[in-house]
Length: 484
Ligand code: ATP
Ligand code: MG
View 1 (cartoon, rainbow, N blue to C red):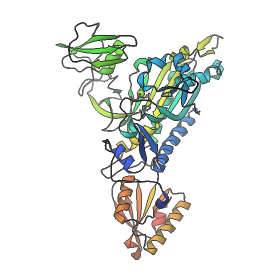
View 2 (cartoon, protein in one colour; view 1 turned 90 degrees about the horizontal axis):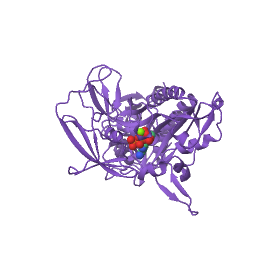
View 3 (tube, rainbow, N blue to C red; view 1 turned 180 degrees about the horizontal axis):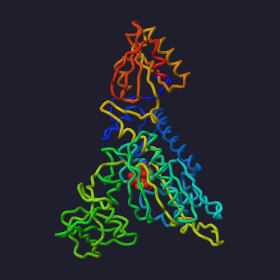
View 4 (cartoon, protein in one colour; view 1 turned 180 degrees about the vertical axis):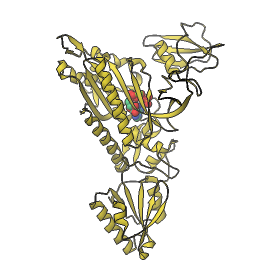
């Protein structure tokens, strides 16, 4: 590809509301552009990265027997009413009607649609297990879309659904998915942890999240210094401490059909963990209140409500726990029969008896991963794409495009490298050297060859983007050097 033909409108200006490196660099580098709140266009460079990640996900999913499908992005509301999620899901679910007054939702997740696809077609245990997935657009009307691709309203997710005879087989597949997701993240060049997660209101026991480690992560993760224990703070446990004094924290709890005032009692030395508090009372939402309510409907104590702190003791090994930040890029879930039961989706088991399928669900944020790579790999100049995610392996920069020798040499090298299968971008724009160098740094491809003044002495330069190291190489050796 020649830069003169590439639509990559780089700019010096960061979006006004951008605070995170991935948001700033992806927009400044012309990878993406915002078209509406939480809605992004992918420009050519962004689309290349997105497709590369999608490809890695697909390869690893197919390798363990996943089958790719593509479900309608729009789901009939009737299915969401069958599962009773139409009302429960809250404002994140965008509901609308067509010209005939039929109700629909913009799919935020596809349990209902996938169960519906399978229910009339998989009728016997002989057809199980089955694992279907898709890599498709999702829409969630997030209350606070922010941080660019990290929390969009429209985003790309890989969502998989597996169907089994029993929970034992769900657990087997769950372990396969933990390994598969780990392999995907390793290939993408990401440092990550698999952590125990809160299973929330959907119920079910086993749920794990895959967290990309980054200071900017929205999630707090608790990691043990002595063993493998790692958990989202929402689910993390520690050895219980003696409580000398209690404090009361009051919240207004919103239920489907009522509102109540709840008192949570914890040690004065602890802080209340909101998700644990929510799970303890089964509310849809907890709202902070300024004053102590006159009447309390429920008092909650003697259950684990506290947020684990740095230095608390690990229940598994007794060592100290530490807290670090992560970006949730994947969530795998032993779901059970919640949706198959609700949608009356059954198969005939080995005894000829109708049973609801036992299910697992597995989500991975494909567009969020584009940003997560940059959150973990950037510097003060711009992006530092990893080997599997970089749009181009190599950048050839012609220092002075009016210099016929420089131009001719760069063109020849470009053609030879392309023929040899190297994914290379030739910066042939009639711009100043400094301008083009800044773009190279912002765009973050791993290496550049600079064809400049040294060419008259038979020399060109290789620049390593990450280390800034410059190596002078003879023009006759540059090709073999880059290929080797
Ligand atoms: P979060 O806690 O970040 O809101 P979630 O737990 O609601 O995410 P899941 O329902 O588990 O998300 O969805 C599976 C994956 O989809 C997540 O692990 C995440 O990588 C991705 N994802 C979820 N919401 C968004 C979003 N608003 N923008 C981009 N990616 C998202
Ligand atoms: Mg999740």
